[in-house]
Amino acid sequence: MIDRDMPYQVALPDDICTDRNFTLIRRFLEERRLECRTRAVIAVWEDGKQEQWRLHCFGDRAAAAAFLDHFGGIVFDPKRDRENGRARGVWRRQGAYERILDLGPLSVPEAMRN
Image (cartoon, rainbow, N blue to C red; front, side):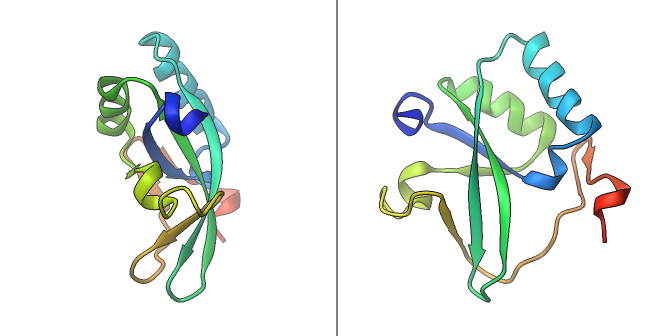
């Protein structure tokens, strides 16, 4: 249902969406009165590495673009990235895994960096 009603989705690593970053994201959405739903997805790279990511889902393309411009992240296309709807909860990623510690104004809290 979210994929149908909120198809404009931006993915951020889950550990970058915690602590003060969670507050920054919420404040950004509230100040702009953007409707956003979040859900989790497990990114799986070709080398087998897995990491949880958080999808920020919007019904409006402009809202998703504003979020992406401010925070960065990766555009998640539910049809393409869920293998045309067959891969629920899994996001097949290309290339080698590389941990993201900083993204736009967000950064992984120091306690979670190791």
